Image 1 (tube, one colour):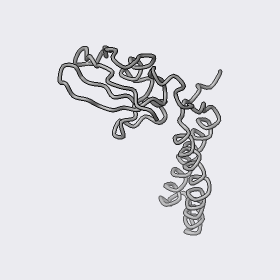
Image 2 (spheres, rainbow, N blue to C red):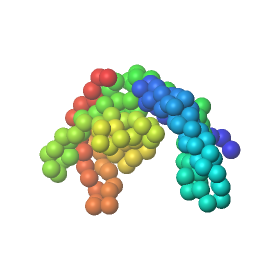
Image 3 (cartoon, one colour):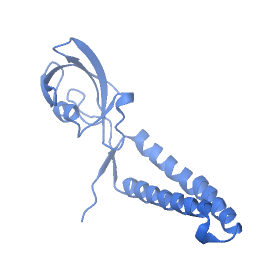
Image 4 (cartoon, one colour):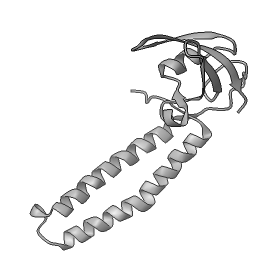
Length: 158
C-alpha cells in the first residue's frame, strides 16, 4: 500500500521536524526517568506509576511513529507559481455573499489545517471549492445549513 502524501508548507514541515526532535530528545528521556523511578518502587504488578509511565511511553512512541511517517511522505508546497489562481499555499480573501462579511484564509494541507489561525485544508469543503479559482469568481460550498456562496475578493501575495 502506498502511503498518502502529506502536503506541507515549509513552515509546517519545519514545525513537524522540531516537534519530532523534541519528542525524541526530551520526552523520551523524561518518560524513561519516570519508568526507572517506578521500577525502583518495587512490585510492578500493583504499581500504578509504572502502568501510567508504560502507557505514556506507548502513546509517545505512536506519536513519534506518526510524525516520522508524515515527514517521510511529505511534499513541500512551493509558493503558488500562478498567483492568479488559488492553490495550496495561497492566501485568499473571500466574501460571504449573503452576510457581506469578508474572511481571509490560507489554503494548506490537512496536516497543517488550523481554523483558529485561518488555515484551512485543501480537503475541506471551502478549500476544495477554492482550488483552481481566480479573483472575482463565485463559489458554492455545500454545508449542513445549506449552500453558502462566496466571492473570491482577492488572492494575496505570500
